Image 1 (spheres, one colour):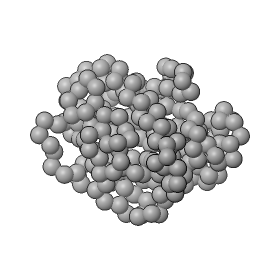
Image 2 (tube, rainbow, N blue to C red):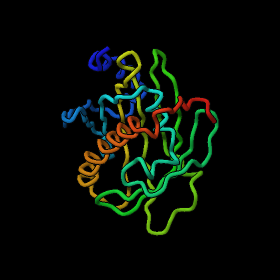
Image 3 (cartoon, one colour):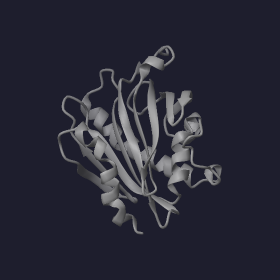
Image 4 (spheres, rainbow, N blue to C red):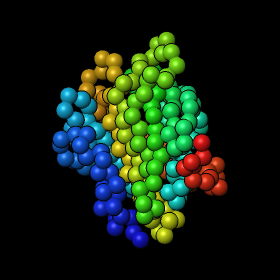
Length: 213
């Protein structure tokens, strides 16, 4: 099955996100096998969405996303990342990042792994800084950070059509135009990093991380 045929399925799987913002998605880039879209969020910075193909099955992509202890090696700008706790298919992750155009940020998010039927796997996360360790000196704690991945099987499950959505405001006193500019680069870069990891030898034998906790 071609990835283009899977887009409606992916958008249906993203339906729970629809109420997050009032405005419609606007495509801002379509190159390198990635479609990048943005939409306005009232009173906040824009929300980002990146879509594209990953030449690995959804289970392997999900394994990359669930391996939060490895983010300092697999994800851009990540200095520290670790699992705080896990309960079934829910993971609490603490992370310190050194993003472009800003000082270090830290945050804790609650990540939920799920199955949507028809082989579709997903992650969603929301901020949960109540379980985060004490804030590090010289960092800004991120309070707005929610998003998710929808992983739709392609080519009889040998590949994935992935949809990555993120709404994050790094906080501090950064102007919104700087945040938007940084997100338009960093969000596609995160997608590319997941694509690279999922097709690497490191994860070639990875199993579905669902119910692994």
